[in-house]
Image (cartoon, rainbow, N blue to C red; front, side, top):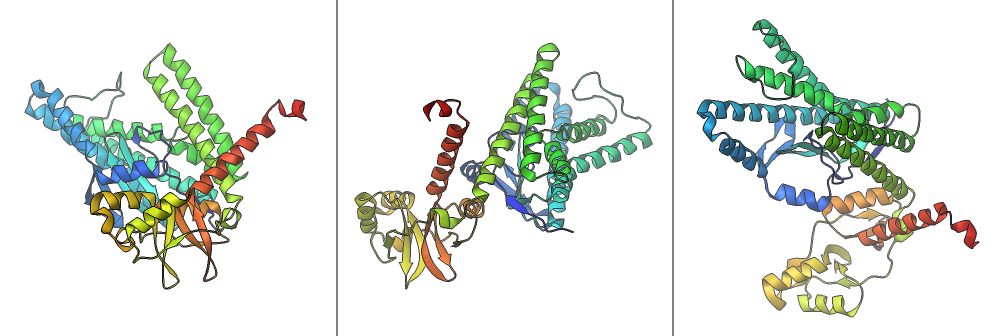
Length: 405
């Protein structure tokens, strides 16, 4: 098999997808940390950590409150259905994760929320076959569940009849029938060929056999935007719910296109292009007030902490303020510095560097050439570079440019 090119697990850009909240990528780092802070660890199937967000309890409570007059049995049936449905969502995410493992892609964790599930990968492959199979694995798992439930219903002598509207079925074997239709809907919806659904990645994987990853992303995003507009039009004609789906699909496609443009831009630069060679270093035994003096004396907000000519930690404005608030002005730098930070190489691409900074939640990192410390990389510099690139691109595409020359 050809070498698999890897790209950043570029945490979710805001748009969330019903039930399958993102096939593992698009959530902002800060939002992710806050999400994990309020999540309960529930198990480790296949060595993959699974978390349940606390808002899931709100969903259970809402179901109980809204069905107070329906009887205990009816309420229990709904709760059992919800639990089994989220079991299907978990299997969907495990399908992605286990297929990714075949391509040596590590899954950090899976989190279940009331609106769906999310598997978070360290990286995603750009090699077309890998992306195609990983994306397809989730819906395929729901399809297999649907087939199994369909066979069970046949054996029970009650084959499922197509419902007139999307609602919970009541009567004999209703739990099995509801799970059958729910998984069928999950498989079908996620195969819509548009981002952020899995179908968008399936399509991009197929297109990737014939063209570059960037071009495949552009075409898939354009198809997704067109489908989003179509859903909105159909929503005004038939069902208002399609309007929200259309908006969701359009925004998801636009976000993926923008995300790919950023990744492509970052691949064009290495750490050496924006290396900061002049910086202030602190020592672990220094007091916090000396760090405050350095903070107020210049424009630097993050500092390396050096001990025996080695980087022992990094200290940011956030740690300084928190240290003052919690311990006063007598605490040492050693007590408040961050000891979890990446060590970057001078020749690394900015895409890889940004990923390492995000994973460690560190705004700066020391940069090495061989074993020699040659400078630091600041995450703000990466953001400024992207802003400059965007401004220059807008200038080059501006119709007013020719008039000013």
